[in-house]
Length: 211
Image (cartoon, rainbow, N blue to C red; front, side, top):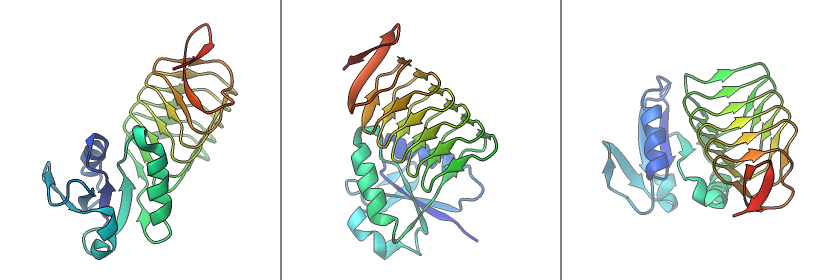
């Protein structure tokens, strides 16, 4: 059966996802959906329509969707995903280099880019994205609509809330809990829970500072 995937968002993230999808043997055709770029061809892939016209192209140009909206718009990612998932199927993408242990759960529409390792019992929420080289140890949980940047290391029994962004190269030790709507600056070392929403960085002896 053919799988035709439409990527919502034709910016940098959408183009990156497109490059990896094009190498996936389960995907037969790819297009973009982007309100600001309708009719353009991006690296040979056509932007077929905006969000409001999506129904016209379903079943002809695409049969599944995937989110290509980046970490600066996590609430928009969630809103669009939830407005469409009752009507359309979302493609769940795991790059072929992904290493998975036992009992790993990956939600609908999640994107896992190259070089990620998911240990036993890891749970990835719907519409979340793991960028390149993310390592998640056993029994940790990433809730929906979150974005984990390249090179992040997450230890065991960690819980990350909805719509969180964890910056590049961050290390999170065991049992840390992060509430919803938290942005963690790149290179942080998280040694304790983050119990309130906001923007934080933690680079000095585990001290948490707002940014």
